Length: 258
Image 1 (cartoon, rainbow, N blue to C red):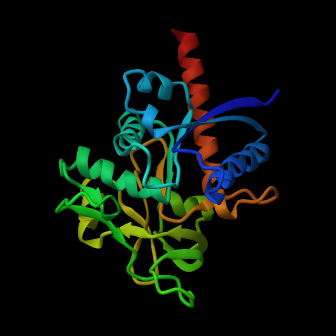
Image 2: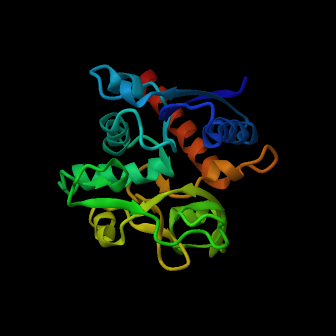
């Protein structure tokens, strides 16, 4: 029988969101490739801020902060991400999950208590996530948005992210559907918090961060789940599921020893 891996998906599932269905599918693609059984569960952000939330999160082997901002609970999403960062749980954040990862460590590691996204209209003076500056070329509408396949995402040599794609890979093409990105004025926040930028757009825009000191902690503005296929699972999601499987096995082995 295939080993079972439990993945908790932080977010408010919406049947109308392609990305949410793609998240479920991409996990299954990776699991079948790795010969594993995936047990995934969506965790509404409103349920992540209660007293029992941490115990619930502990029951999963990996956590994925999904797209879908603004979330039903701003605080709940931040709590879920904080758990993964603080407890060193395998973690992947994509699109909105990437943005809130940036907000979480700006608030809780760098102590910028009002760090926020422009999307929330909070009046904060520390807007670390703001509307995209460079939209995808040839869009018919005039509203800035990253949407569709965007080429020339440059990978940082020697990063974990690059290793997932292949050590000789210098750039990749990924899919976006996003109105907001990281404010470059706060790039120092990522470096100071120990989360270096590991992927950039054509003009240096921040497209991914990772923590080299965590078991697996990667967040991308692009959505790897949108390009995952049954016969070709996305390499980032493969790496995430493998890390979750390894962590689940270690937890089980440790509990036996106790």
